[in-house]
Image (cartoon, rainbow, N blue to C red; front, side):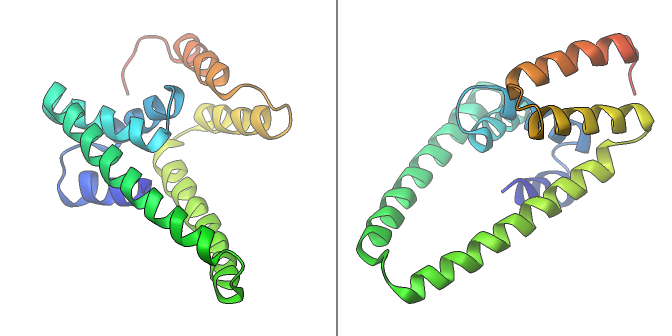
Length: 154
């Protein structure tokens, strides 16, 4: 979904800059609830203020809920099917590849110097090795970013 959002909103339609998109993803990650929905709300608000945010909520909540119910009902009836099990293994592996692709693209565009590389590595190790709270890590990174970069832009 993140790749789709970026391609449609940043590259094709040019409604957002890459930095605005990354900011929306960051806000979506640190606010309570599903990150992709929160990212969409943030983007909707950036584009059309309250109307955009409400439209995004309605579109994502309705379609996502209906689709989840239909898929869950199908899965419960067919979960022991050998063909479905094989398909789900393939889908699971593809999802990992898609996530790695998103991480790579975001890193290539976001990590611009050794300081941002250190932030990224520190955050990765804080989550992967030390199992720190992601929300606390984001807040601490924001404060540390203010200390390291000051109030200058770009």
